[in-house]
Length: 162
Image (cartoon, rainbow, N blue to C red; front, side, top):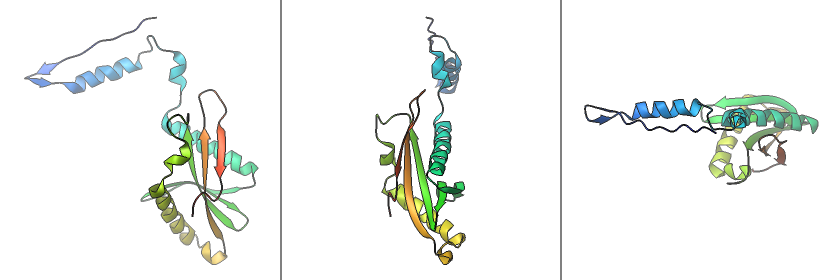
């Protein structure tokens, strides 16, 4: 096994050139020397989240949900999925993590996040005139714990908050 380590200290007119050192650290991170190639196949946080949303969508469809919108953007954030069952519009927050080692994904959806989701949901609900059509509203959270190379563990929290 070959490991490459180096330190770069560059000074120009008495100033430390940290940006050059950062460049070389970044360059060394691109090298595969002494690393397990499997590490480079791992998903980025954003890609893991997108795969989690897609898997959640498939999961909800098997339970009879009709997905009516995905990744709806507002000035204050985004609603991951919006679904419908009969006369209920469901706003779904999806949280995907590789493990629950530090905290369960459900714990990330704190009071502040829930308030933002409610605010965005009410805007969408009124903009689409669901209230005048007699639709109810509900907030669900779906969590996925998806370790590398394994199938995800999906938990669906129905009516998770009001």
